[in-house]
Length: 121
Image (tube, rainbow, N blue to C red; front, side, top):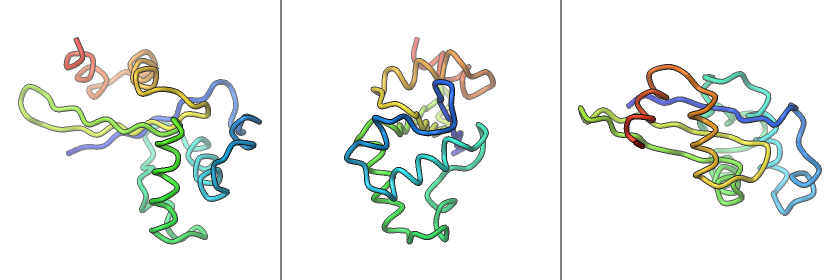
């Protein structure tokens, strides 16, 4: 399975006030901030963040927190040949999965985006 990581910003690499002032933990806010400063395609899996002040359990809980809050979305796509790809999207605003996938498809080119477009037709 291949993985792709996507960052969706609405114009800044800093967090919006409504995110900073939300109920997200400091660990989740820090993880989101770090994720949003990375260029697209960089590995943003949990193992990337371990050792930067938090343990695996805290990172896992923070990722789940971001998912629950609409700042992180994970999609697994299966092609007609049975190959699977995982796409993880981080967003600086809380968005639904449908919006996250739509923005991914609008702003991404390459084999994974083309395959996703075919699967979602």
